[in-house]
Length: 505
Image (cartoon, rainbow, N blue to C red; front, top):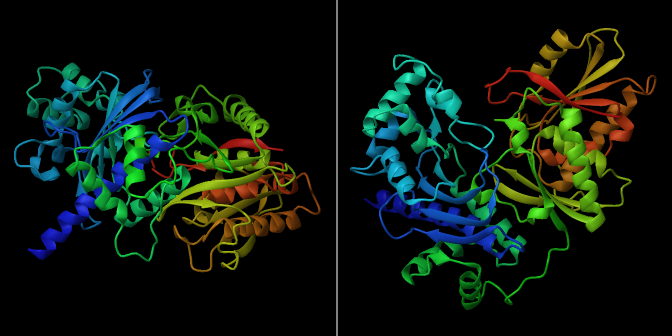
């Protein structure tokens, strides 16, 4: 019984932290978040957290999003798996009568047509389940063109449609399409500890109190319950500011603007809780150019993406020479940003780096992790060509995939230079901004050595590492260019290999 009680407490805290990830956005200057509700009163239909936006935020479809309704499901174990059949089973979300799809149907009946619906769970989709093939890695929406692919009910996707349609008592696929349009599924979502870190970072950004990592409790968990008890669970900025002042979370009604101007580049979308602290005019949204994480077939990285990123960053520099970069973006865009804001740009930068332990603010001079491990460097001669391939294995191993791509697609590559961590790949092997900058400098210096005899030899970069590290490597582009940055099909829903993006010269 005690274990069940603890699990329920943790589940409540999990929901509370997702609430704060949204509610603290109310304190951002020029925020598009205007109202956040915690455990909305009324029927239980995607009402754990409701967020309203004005102006609306960008979505994957043609219409902007005015509201997002969240259904949250936390599990004690990390090994849970689910599939499309669980969406019709009430037990999957801990209910006795209403399934996830039935709640979605009811929520859509009472929500504006411009709303989205997010299901967040710590469980993961089973590898062999058709559900995995219809969830976009761009913004986690259900891919309607894949679910409604014109096949019969006996096909793989037809079985999904048939089960869902009959469960909801619908007469046609068109009715089902209307219900699941705008549904987002966030599997394997952040842990309790990761959410704690993420709330702390956002609180620091907006000028609210943070909680020490040494504290056994997390103050924001109880404060969420107090809001509900006092019937203050529907928050606007004014209500939240007053509540925070009453509890000593803010020193004044306003907040000083951060020393670093927040600017955001988003080429893929996370949950609405990830709406960054950057103002709308300081946010570049590129999601319309991508389908899932892949550039649209009718577009080109060099002609369609690079000019927009370049113009956006240079415009931001005209506003401030101290920038806080939020890069919810492809690795190539992080490298490109670094090449624009290189070491000679005289612009001070810090980066919001997201990872397994939540979001952190990294700076090259933050002194964090400067004594961390250096790269293990290995050079492999594979031919007599003048070009160089670089494989950076930090978060995941990159060398084997890079080698296979080079042997198949790049006959002019004669050497492969591999950089790896002594402890092997992992999501926490880079300790901070100082460590990432030191690793990037080590890599750049090693590449320069190989280019001494032929400074114009092309460098092909295959990297599995934090965006911050690629940003810092991009700052050294003058010493390693011309270079080509490659994107990898990590979710295995595209070509299952690398593909080139920008050529940086």
